[in-house]
Image (cartoon, rainbow, N blue to C red; front, side, top):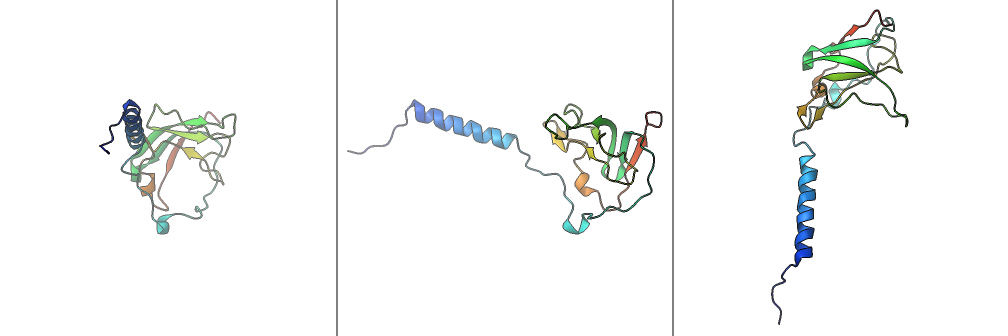
Length: 144
């Protein structure tokens, strides 16, 4: 005689572990992604600008996307990966000090978080920045 299968404690535990795992994966992901530029809006080659001195940046402003933030120097970790700005400050941008400074005749590397568990961070709206968008830096002229 066949009856209904009655799950034992192991089966109930496995289902519970699976449910918690699914919840954790979902909780760690965002349902709303930051805005991204369309293919037509992406810049393939930045415009050439005259170079400036090598003073380090201390602030960045991108009015078009509401960025007004401090800049801190960042470097590579022991494995050669870019060390991001600390995660505890959502409005902090890192400048890779092993490269060029903004305004020099090369591409300066800036890094910032898009979001955190607390919500959007400094570069959340970066995808809304359009080609030729104005980015301003305040440089530390006495630090160079």
